[in-house]
Length: 276
Image 1 (cartoon, rainbow, N blue to C red):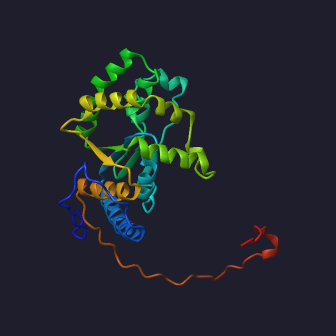
Image 2: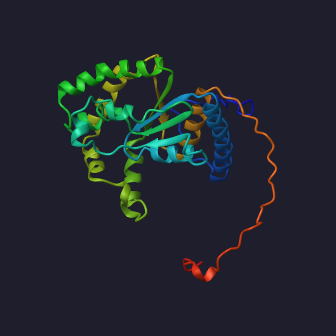
Image 3: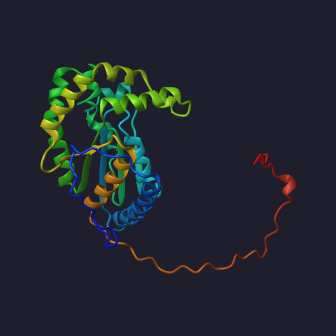
C-alpha cells in the first residue's frame, strides 16, 4: 500500500454499534483522498500486469452500484471496467454455468468490477426457481473450486457482500418509486424480493457456508449508511492490494505547430444551439 495511505482503526468498531450519519463535508474530503489512492493503485496494477477481480453482491438497494461508481469514477476505463450482465441468452443458458463470466475476466494489467456475478445462481436463480435443485447444489460444490482455480492462475479475487436492514431497504425502495431519476432502478423483481426476505436470507447463509473459504473469503459491508459503506469498502479494497506510487516523468508541453494549416470557414460547420 502507498505510504501516504494509513490504516484507520476505531476502538468502537464492530457490527453491533449504532452509527450516526456521516457528515457530507467530511465524506467528500475523505472520498477525494481515497480516490487519489485508487488512481495510484490502478496504475500499479497496470505497471505490474496484475489481474484483479472484485465481486459486489448483496440485497437489492444495498448500495453496490454507488460503491462501484465511486471506485471507478476517477480511473482509466481501459484499466478498470465494470461488468453488469443481463439475463442470459438461450445459448448462454445451455453453456457451462461459469462460461459467460470467464469471458469477462481481466487480462494482465486490468481490474474488473462485477456488479453481481456468478453468485446469481446462489441467490435469485435459486430463490425464484430459475435453476433446478440439481444445478443449484452442483453450483455450490463447484464454485469454491472455480475460484480456487482463478486464484492459482494468478488472479486476485475479492468478494464483498453488502448488508442492509429491511427498514433501510424499504426506505430506499420508496425513494426509487417516488423519484423520476431513480424510478428505473426499481423492478418487479425488487417487489418479489420483499415477499421472499426469509428465503433470500437462508440462501445467503447457505452460500456463505459453502463459499466463504480461507483462500477466497467474503467481506461483509454494513451498508445502512451509504457514505460510510463507500468509504469503508474503498479503504478496505486498497488494503488488500499492496501498491506503491508510480513516479511519472515530468512533462513539458511543446507549443502547437500551426504551420501549413488553414481552418475552413466556420459557416461550413453545423454547431449545436448554445442554450446555456
